[in-house]
Length: 237
Image 1 (tube, rainbow, N blue to C red):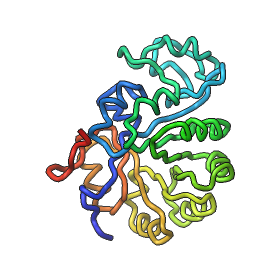
Image 2: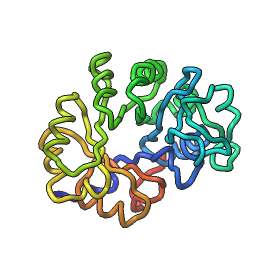
Image 3: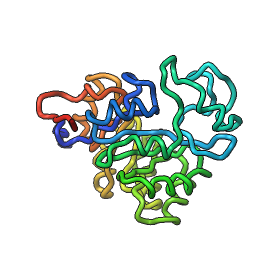
Image 4: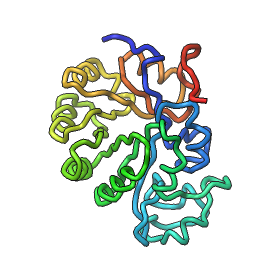
C-alpha cells in the first residue's frame, strides 16, 4: 500500500461542501468550485417530472415544508429555501449550468428511473460528468444507453471481491466506499488490481482524510474543501 500524495488525490465536494454551504444548491456549487476538483450532487425526480438536486427523499430536514420530494411539483419546490439560507432547491440543468465548464460533476442517481433523463441533462452540459449510484439498475441503464458514460458503484459493505465483481460487470471506472470500508486492509489494493479507482465518502475532518490518504485512495468525497493538507494544493481561482 502506497500513501496517496495529497496533491494527487481528487477532492470531491460532497453535496458541494455541505458543511460549509447550503447543500446541493447553486450557491454552494459557485462557492465550492474554485476550491475542489469536483462537486458531488444528488438527483431525484419531483411530482411534475423535473429532475431536482436534493439528497433526502423527504423535505423535512432541508426545508420548512414536509412530505416526499416525489409528491411536490417543481412550482412548489422552487419556492422553498434550503437549511435556513436564501438558496433554493435547483433543477439538475440549473446546477450543471452553475458549475464552471472545467469542473467535474459527480451526479449521484438516487432513483434508478431518473438515469436516462440525468444522462440527457449531462449531455447538454460542458462538464465532465461521473455518474454514481448504489442502484445497479441505474448504472446498467446508463451503460446500455451510452457505454462511454463514466460510472461508479456506491457500496456500503466491505467485501472487496464482491464490489469489484459488481463494478466490473457494470463497466464502472470507480468504486465509492464509505471511509471504514476504504480503510480496511487490502480493499484499495483489490480495487486497484481490477483497474478501478477508489473515491471514498464522506470525510468530515483531517483525521479521516489522513486515514484515507494512508489507505491509498484516489479520491476523497468531503464535506469541506479545507481538509486536505497544505501547501501544494492549488485553488481553481
